[in-house]
Length: 142
Image 1: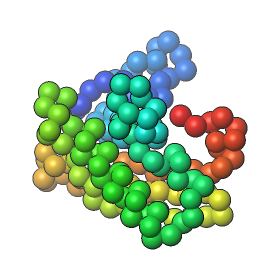
Image 2 (image 1 turned 180 degrees about the vertical axis):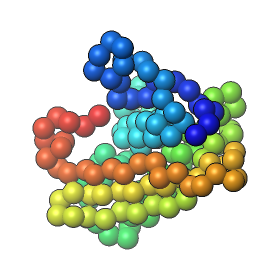
Image 3 (image 1 turned 90 degrees about the vertical axis):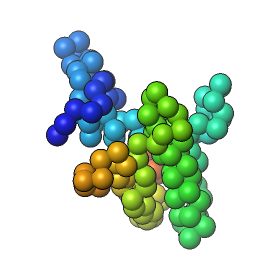
């Protein structure tokens, strides 16, 4: 895989030697999108519109309205915040596929994006998120 983007990807390694190890493109992309998608709106003081409503969706009924709301929220977050760092109006990715399923109290999201800058590249399955109420009750929310 080429190294278009280079930098640390979360989670960082546990030891000093692995704390800031450069990651490949897919790991950096997955990390960046995961933290954009899992940040609640109004969580960042100077950017209240940054993030998505995904962390709050765990308690919502799983219906077509929720799926459409989350799909549009993810689309907006990807095109707005996953952009070229030098030109904010230049998105790097587009949403290729979005699936939301519920298994008991767990909301499972599967988000696939396509690299706009490289039309020959295959779609990249970026983020699979499983949210459950117990995750938030234990203080595990990012």
